[in-house]
Length: 125
Image 1 (tube, rainbow, N blue to C red):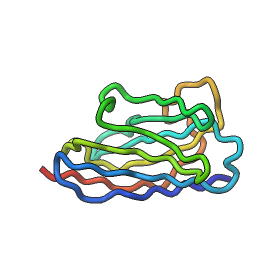
Image 2 (cartoon, rainbow, N blue to C red):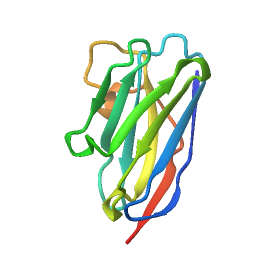
Image 3 (cartoon, helix red, strand yellow):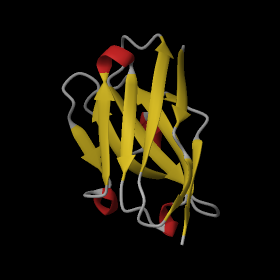
């Protein structure tokens, strides 16, 4: 089993920044990639970004490129999501996820095997 714990969410004004963290523990040795998704009130969960665990290749939803940056620290088994120039539309619960599958579409939530509990990000106008 794998456990994922997100942190770093909170309330921020529009234009501000936040860095989310996702710490993985347990049987992570077969992990291939980790991703971030978000769900805004009344909306479906959407892909934000993903990163491969070994090579560090990154993948972004088109709308998130430039403002969001995903990174990882293998030694800490932790993935980060740096979010800049935040907008009220970025308000959502943010979830990290982990997959053991390679050569797949990391933008699909069904790709992922494990999910964290989520951390709330609220951007005020």
